[in-house]
Image (tube, rainbow, N blue to C red):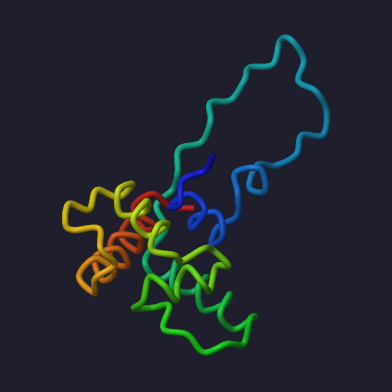
Length: 120
């Protein structure tokens, strides 16, 4: 089962399956197997541009740039308190898992920072 953060990342950048190029032919026994590519960090501007494009495509007003709930809704993800609690645990939040403004603000910042660090 994918993590909540993984679902957010996939909704913005596409899943690994979508990102992997299809091979034309099976490699020969003599061909070397390439090493898997490491994630390339995405700039904050790249993340923001992708989110703007998603928001423009949907045509709905949203505060996704400051609200974790709106960000998750923009990406068609369950923004329930249970999912936000899971996301908070995934990202290392140590405060009360109560859906407070403090928790939600921390979550939004942590998601945006993690997207930029882990890349698409």
